[in-house]
Every structure is written in C-alpha cells, then in structure tokens.
Image (tube, rainbow, N blue to C red; front, side, top):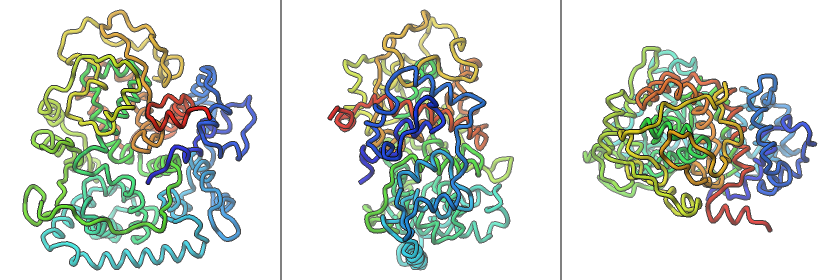
Length: 560
C-alpha cells in the first residue's frame, strides 16, 4: 500500500518553496513542517494571489539562488541518532529536495530514497542487511537456468544485451569495450530481474532506469536491491495493458490545460494535445532529458519529493509467478509472456496502435555515439500512429461539475486511443478555423504563463475574440497521492519543460511533427536549474491551491 494523503506532510508549500522565499515571514519551526500539509498550507502560506505571484517572481529571478548546497556526509549524520538509525526521514527528504546530495554520499542516501531499508535499522544492521540481500542476489543470479527455459533465457539475455550496449555509453562508467565489467553487471542485474519477475520480465527503458543506480552504487548486488526498490513503484509503466502510462498522459494533459489554457488550445489546434511526444519523459521519469550528472540530481530531487515508503520487512527480490503459461512473445511458444510494447490499449486488441508504439520504442544508433534507446519516432512513424488510431476528437462536452473529471473513474484507467471528450474539448484539427495564429504578446519574455497563478486560472476569463470555443470550465487536479500515480512532482517537471519552450513553439507555429523533432533534439540538453526552479514554484502553487477532485482529497481538505 502506497503513501496516504497524510504522509505528504513533508511537502507543505512553504517548505517546497524554500526558506529564502517569503522573506517577510519568519521561518516555520520543524514542528510546523511536520503538520499535515493541508493544515500547513492554510497556516503558513494562505491562498492569496499576491503570495502566489511572489513565489513565481522569486522563482524566475536571476539574482536569487533558491538551491541549498548538496547534502554533505557531516550534515547527513545529523539526521541519525547515536545508534545510526534515521530519526528524521521526512526532514532528510526535504533537505535533499532543496539541494540534492553530494556525489560521494549518493550510494548511502539513495538507498533511503529508494525505500530499500526497513524502518529502524542501526548502522550495523544496515550493513548486515545489504550483505545478506547481496548474497540473495548472487544466489538468484546463479538460478537463471532453473527459473527460465533455455529459449526464454536466450531471448531475455539477447534483448537485454542489445539495450545495454546502447545505454549511457558516452558516460565514462559505461565506456570501453562491450564486454567491460560495468556493462556486464548492468546486463546481469537486468536479466536477473526479468527472470525473477516473470509478470514484468524485461522491457525497453528498464536499462535507462538501472544505469544511474548501478553507476552510483558501483556494486552489482546493491544496485539490484535498489532497482527492485524503484521498480516496486515503476513496474506498472511497463505493463502491457498500458493503463499506468495512459493515466500519466491524462494527468499531464489535465495539468497543462489547467496551467496554461492558451498553450493547451494551441496544441489542440496543432493536433498535438495528446502530448505523445512526452512519452519518453513519462516512461523514464525524465532520466533521458538531462545530461547524465544533471539527471542524477534531478532523480534524487524527484525521489525526495515522495513520502517515505519503507518495506514492512525487507525489499522483495523475487516477484510473483507468471499468470500465463506458454503465451509467448509474438505468439511464439517458449518466449516470455509479456510483449515488448510498453504502451497498449487496455482493451487488448493490438494491431496498428501497438505497431506504431513499437516504432516509437525502436532503438537507433545516434551519430553522437551511444545511440538513443528510446528515440522519438520518425515523422512517418508519428503520423502512422496518429492516423491508424482513428478519430479521437469529439466536440466539447460541458461538464456540470469540475469534479466529474477526476471524481469519476474516467482518469484512473483512460485509453490513449479512445475518444477523449473530457480531455480533448476540440473540433477535429483539420476543421476550418477563423482564429489567427496564436499570439504570444501576453506571455512574459521567459515564456512564463500570463499574470496570476498558473494553476488557478480565473473562472470565465476572456478569450481571444477570434477563438470559437467557449472558455473551459475550471478544472480540479487529483490530490498528491493520486496525481501522476503518486509522483506529482514529476508531472510538474514535465510541465516546466513544456512552459520553457511555450513561446518558441507558439511563435514559430510548430506543428505536431515539428514539436516531436524539437524535443527530440533536446535529449540530454535541458537546463536543470531553470526547470527545477519553475517546477518547484508550480508544485508549491498546486499544493497551496487545494484544488483536488477526488473523494479522498475532499475528505482530507475538509475542515476538522
């Protein structure tokens, strides 16, 4: 069972914003920071628009340095008691959220962030625990032949190897010959995971998730334990029914529409509001969008935004058995049961949609060396995907209550290739329109959203006279424990990247294919500092807005 709403107390808006932001207010005590964050929202920050604007103006100011230095070893020990037990896990995560971790300390701290340790272990107990789990891994690694048929094992190993040889090879840790020890370790831990987790097996993208963990741990057994920790949360991304990914797409779409209706409408008119060009972002939690060292910082900041979720006893290194026997890959007997399509319609089916998604996840060797494991599709592939999935736009449906968007189960299990009236209030993109090309004159030079809170648009705000659609109803957003399937900050990182490029996209009238190419060229090139600053401000705004639409969220925000 994942974290509940009350577990999100570590991310009250004032703490998310940072201690240097609201200079007129006295910094809250650590006791206040531990209050349920919905109460902290009201008591510390309030809901006034002026404070939201103050947060935003701080976030984009060039002279303010909102980030603390990375967590050092000496400071880390202040979070431990005399027996070496972690005594302040929430405060540790909040500290990492603001500054990250010194590189030399990551192999220690990441185990906490990835929920490897059970609660209450002393320093000696942690050492013994990792030694025991490493021995368990070595035993599992020696059992490949007992756990998988020769045909299955050959298929898994060859598939993993193909991807490992193209994963982060430009980084020194993975450079060198193809039979180097680090590449072999990455191959072996991914193969062991696939063999011991037959319901998940191996899928493209997993090597990208494991690579930074192995490079930081520099120990195959420890890296495997940490990988099992992160896959407890992310395995659903790779489930063949595609529901987890579809939910994340729907939530990102809802967030963008909420934050910047004009930009969202532009994407609608460009036929790009399905946001499929963000597929790699959501699948890999943005690991590929930043240079390797920046990605390490981004990952630890993202993980620290999540409440602690330690295992009740210990991390399980073996998953449940396969549910289906002899349902092979591509219907070939003896192959792993799950197909290597990372995103499929939940209704089964297959066909053109799966074929196009398979194109999207095809690997290619890039000219810069190392290649890209998850490349954006070629223009033909993208067009095939969008053409083959058939009509997907319906006319605008006005909902009587905004809560219907989330309060119903419509966003919990959406289908990406089905009609989407709730999230696609648009006519067909080919239909004639009297509106002129979108104007960016109301946007700030930095590409920020127009004045006011980007997550609290004014109800009934005037639209451009040339636009034919009425203003959409105000939208609520899911509460943190539901939003982005429990990782809301990752969605705000995606939103921040989109808004960084908003003005360029609208000013140049980029269409769907040009959008995909634009972001494909930016792989490993996004500016981490700018993206983090913007994402943290937007995230703080979301937390203070309390505009959550779900029964659970409504109960949590009700006055006691």
